[in-house]
Length: 166
Image 1 (tube, rainbow, N blue to C red):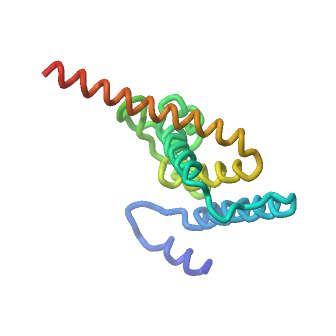
Image 2 (spheres, rainbow, N blue to C red):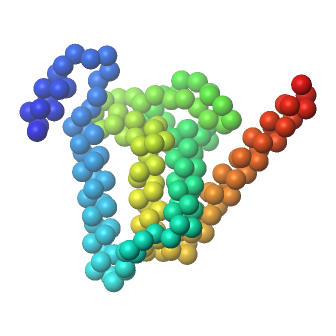
Image 3 (cartoon, one colour):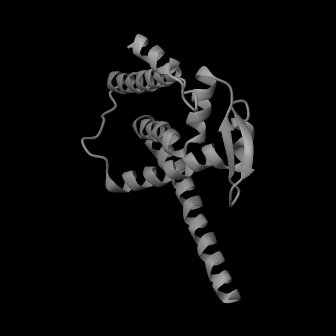
């Protein structure tokens, strides 16, 4: 597999992809997930047979909002700055950035800039929270759901205002 990764990396392409670093991130993710499940098992925490729909929706919306905050929010750009470079503001307090560096630095930069990619990690953390601290996890997730609901009302209000100005 390592030989295949090296041969793919040596092919000319427009953009270099740090495949070994991606593989390392996948390994870290799966190791942490397996370790968390092992700790849950050994401490007697039961993984539910089914996730209640209310938790699915709560954590789904919270994951969405957190992934946007981490990957795009202007105010969290200081946290991303060691791995990214500013390109331009995009809309509603969000910015567009690009990853810098190479290897693992670039791979982590790509991870934190992609709301779809980082959502997997955030969702996993939230579900881990349900196993180890369900009340706190639901409370924190509810906070991000309320922010998401507020965002919809902000957009709705702005759309009504624009329609009234026409």
